[in-house]
Length: 174
Image (cartoon, rainbow, N blue to C red; front, side, top):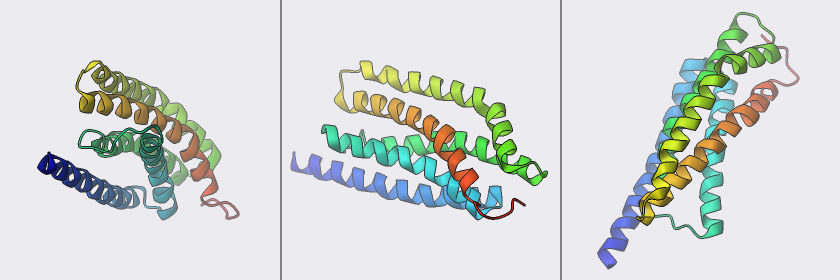
């Protein structure tokens, strides 16, 4: 049992290190793709907040950080950043054409919202089906990933727009 617990701790620590590395790498990719430090930073936050919220909720309700639940952060980051990239890149593209920031954001949301809703629903249902498992690791993985996907969608639709519109407050829009 000692070796099993030690191995599980090593897996958890490895996943956390991987999550930090992935977050930094994604931030860099966003910076290069969006060509704007403020837009890239604003795009990273909505992906970090749901993961931190979910891990905090796990601690609050007593769900252990184990080999099954720690991977939720990596899975969620990998899937959820896709929605963020669609919204942020569409916004940046419109802004570069001279469209006002508020209008660019409104048009970007209108354009990508159906895809964001469908992918979140599909991934949430897919991972939610794992809740039927009798194996605790699998059940927790499915429930937590489905939950974090929903939270990521809300963050992309509420937090990301607020950050994008507030990222250059007080300065003229380019």
